[in-house]
Structures are given as structure tokens and as C-alpha cells.
Image 1 (cartoon, rainbow, N blue to C red):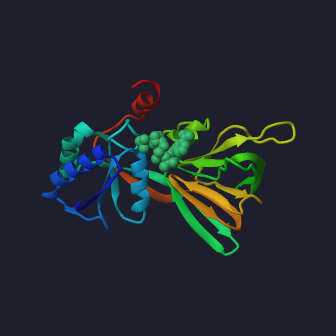
Image 2: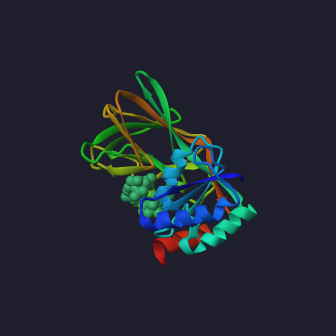
Image 3: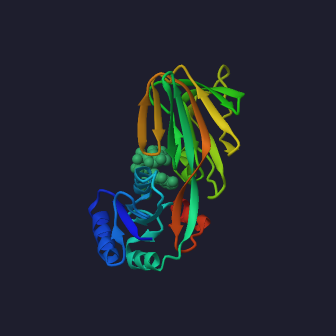
Length: 260
Ligand code: NAP
């Protein structure tokens, strides 16, 4: 590692911590905000999402310091900054690859690819949507309701969990389809439970309500006109997180959701 950058949440504490990291790394490495080898995120999981989208096309790794509650992408606490500096200087971290979700939006004018670390969402709180869902060309259902969420295992602890989806152990190459407020009565039926699919699958979503399509990709929101089809798959692209010490996923979910 030669070059680093820091992505900072807007609050004062995060800026103070980032200044501290910057001062301590300066004598050892070069700061490069355009083409860094290491991106240090200071804030929360939301800050990591910001950092990942900002440096998506960069051949870099990510590490996070959390200045709020304990996160899922952030490994160091504010009082562990010296430990982080030491770990970066010693450079012995293991690479933990987390796959992205790939969403291809096909319109009358062509197609565009979007990526998410957590999830994609087509939910709309004001108008119900009728969405034809097929998996690898096999028709599954017409979903009616607020919308659809497809998450990665990294995103399984985020919006997916609020929708009743399963928490999935990191490293497994899967995506999880969950319903957002399905309309369910004797005329309309949908699966009603989360569906976990491996990387051999492609989800196809087709709807008359996709003009425009309201598409959430992590913290980023797109409005796209004249959408013919949305294809969702597990991407071959990964985000590289550096883990300088082994963190137990089970301890992390226990601390985040059950007891602190
Ligand atoms: P945000 O304020 O940046 O994030 C909302 C909350 O989700 C924050 O507490 C954030 O943690 C947490 N979060 C983000 N990724 C997570 C992960 N992989 N596992 C567990 N918690 C995670 O909100 P935003 O900018 O609108 O959207 C960013 C993400 O927030 C989305 O990808 C979505 O998954 C999640 N979100 C969840 C809900 C929900 O559960 N109802 C609603 C909207 C958005 P930090 O505080 O550490 O940043």
C-alpha cells in the first residue's frame, strides 16, 4: 500500500478522527484522493456505502472506523485509531471479498448497469406496482404491492432484515428477493417469503409501472423512464475489505441486534 484516502461522514467527531488518521499516516504513505490503494471510511456503514460507490472503479481496498454504533462494514472504534495505524503500517490484513449485486435496466434506448453492495429496491410508497417476476426465464408470479428488494448477503442485515429477510453469513454467493408490503388476498397471491438464489440465477422484473422506474441502489436513488425490463444478478465484481484481525460475524450480529 502506497496511497490512501479518507471518506468522512459529515459530523464533527468523524472529521476529528479523520484528521487524526491523516496526521498519523502522512509520514508513511501518500494521500491520493483520485487513485488510492486504501480507502479509509470514518463514520458508519452508510459512509462505507458512500466510499464504495465513489471508488467503485478503483483497484483499492476498504477499511472502516465507526464513530457511531457498531457497524457491519466498520471494524475499528474511535479509541482504536492507533491500532488501525499500526495495522496499516504493518500491512498484514486479510482481504475479505464481498460481492456486488448487478442490476441491468433495459429501456427503449438501450441498457445500463448499476451496482449495489447492500441491495436494489424498486419500492414506491405511494402507488402500488404489479411486477411480473421470472427467474432464469421461468415465470414465478405477478407481485402486487409497494415493490421488490433484492439484497446481497452484505445487505442482509440492512433493509432486507426490516422486510423480514434472513441474515446471511458473509462469503456465500447469493442474492435474496424480498417483498415490500405485498397485497395479499384471495385474488392476488405472491410467494410471501424471502427467496434466496445462488449466482447461477437471474431475476427478471417487468412492469407497466416502470415508467418511470424508481430504483434505489444502496443510498442512491434513480428515476428512469420507459423501462422495459430490470435484470438482477450476483455480480462477478467484488469489493475488497481489509480485515486486520478476525471478527466473528455471530458476535457482530449478537451485538448489533440482541445485546450490546
Ligand atoms: P443510511 O442512513 O445511510 O442508513 C440507514 C441505516 O442502515 C443506518 O443505521 C446504517 O448504519 C444502516 N446500514 C447500512 N448498511 C447496513 C448493513 N449492511 N447492515 C446493517 N446496517 C446497515 O440510509 P440511506 O442512505 O437511505 O441508505 C443506506 C442503506 O440504509 C440502504 O442500503 C438500506 O439497506 C438501509 N436502509 C434501511 C432501511 C430500513 O431498515 N427500513 C430504510 C432505509 C435504508 P450506520 O448508522 O452505521 O450508517
